[in-house]
Length: 235
Image (spheres, rainbow, N blue to C red):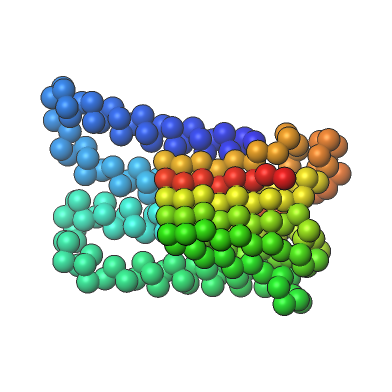
């Protein structure tokens, strides 16, 4: 709950800051042209904050935010030009793929012997997808949503070596994860003008639903980024 709350505070603070800059600009209170050049730096700091606060469990989303925002920051400071960005932007695609592979390798090290179907891959754009997972050796996976929605039902799945990790990249859309009510879930998603929350009854991370704290850690970790979208955990 604390991590989700801090994510909302970070997102809300960013929206307030942008609104203040817009107000200062429209009212001609102060010259804001030079200040706008530094706005991408805020996203770089948010990405770094997400990395550190998650103990570097949340990798793909924050690193992509840092890379893209950092590029536009150095562009605004005139270290590189638009032509360079137009030429080299496919490197962002390469980086995204590498980060997904790194996440898969992390899960492979934690779950040495994975049954077929132990990992989830759900990718949707301009549409919707519904997935139902029933394996008893669930290790995690990736959910990528762009201008659409995804619903993943894990209520009949089981995790033999917790925690399983799901990386959720949601852009202008939504992802809903239905998980067993007894699972402890850590939400490490970076929300940027979006949201990420566990909507189940309040429970202590790493404990039973009544908060007795009989487990050492979470069953499921949800990482990633939600940009103008949301990630919701329900049961």
